Length: 505
Image (cartoon, rainbow, N blue to C red; front, side, top):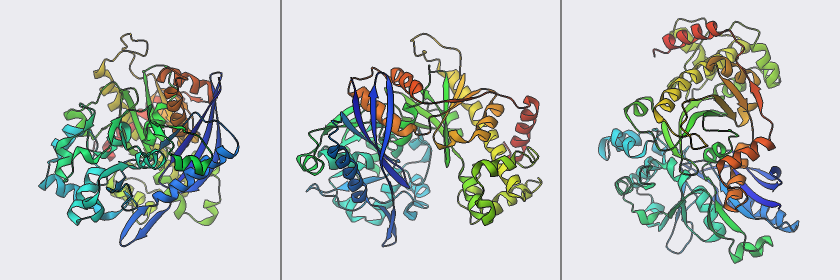
């Protein structure tokens, strides 16, 4: 039987709609539309245009309607933390404020000092601290007397708000709610203590639903606009990273993943949240996963370093392709200069090149001057940071003792690292990662978020039974490129010792 799934995949800079076809255990994708997701600056704040995103969704659905395709369902995934206020009359009170807005600067520390202390918040949520998490956004709005917050009836996270616009049904999907720093993974619901701390109640949020739950069907209004019938809308993993991890083509539970792009997310799939002194000390996060799992991971500054430097280099360097520029970096001395990619100096400096050079100068290392030297410094340093975080993951994995996918005890630990996302195409960094970690690396798929979205729709439709069948289909439908350790093990070990010394760890 052939199934058609409509996926809406929205990132912080762009979005797209995709038609997925599942037949005979094979998934195919067709991109229908691609569009920018603009930040709107007005009145001293930054907003997302929720109506523009809705328009693009409808546009994609109209294309499907005109082609006469009988789609099985619709699923939406987006970036995390942001939300929409809905009034008593069912109207959107204001475009949602963007997490990039500076109104949260300093508010997180103020919240810890005046409302709930830092350790208590982590003990409740197990979420790493970022000033733009929903909890701190809501606190900042409360302190500013935000009129939309004062008069709202419902607060819906962005994917839930778009699903509500299609169906009229208000839900709170688990994976997206977990990014808010208000979800208690032990209870599986939002924390009354944290909600109350910003002047809200549980009633302000929709009913909690797990990935794969049907939210509702298209309203009569949307049916008329698109030419479609009462198509079900599914709460897939609404958080894009949750959808991406669902698409990791692993064969069993003995894997770690690296969602590689501007930012790198390295983690494991755990049967329950890992919240203890060690995870607090290392600032690991516990985000909602599929089928009751937890995405236990750490954010690492990824290709942001390279992307920022590339924009600063002379025009003749910028004209080089990525393989050309990165290939030149392979010709210069390895481990000459090393940085900690997650040092605050690299968060958003006026000049990334100067920030890297200053770091090396202050730590008594040779200062990288040429684009090739700077690129090599970044790639070496990222691989060494991955080695460090991977070591911590192995430590946490060893303490879990969870059953394997077959239900039998597993002591194999982590046997493979799956690299997914756009960074899975970076062959040099992929090889460095295999060398640094001393483990097999499988790169791909690149478009993992949309794939996870569609396969969770397939599960809701009964076309697949569970995540492991999903992953087998994905493995059979995409190309994975293997990387095995080929570098000098002793050289990488010495470089790691240098990394620890340079970064004071």
